[in-house]
Length: 86
Image (cartoon, rainbow, N blue to C red; front, side, top):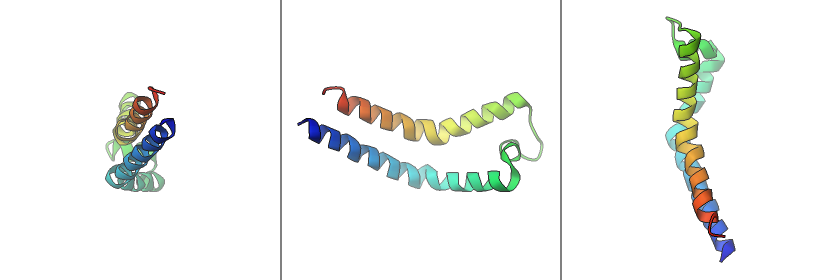
């Protein structure tokens, strides 16, 4: 019983990662390409530039929108809810 619970958690986690990759991961490839071409500050702030606070807030928002909420949070919830009954 415990083995099947772990297997379900792994399969659901793999599904989340695959869905995340097609919805967000491909966009992140373009984001990292823009960072490579222009630099992080120019990619986040654009041609007008921005203050340090806006720059940091923009980085936090971008990473939370692309990685934390759609990938890390669902995988953590899957692991927590599938393995807490063991």
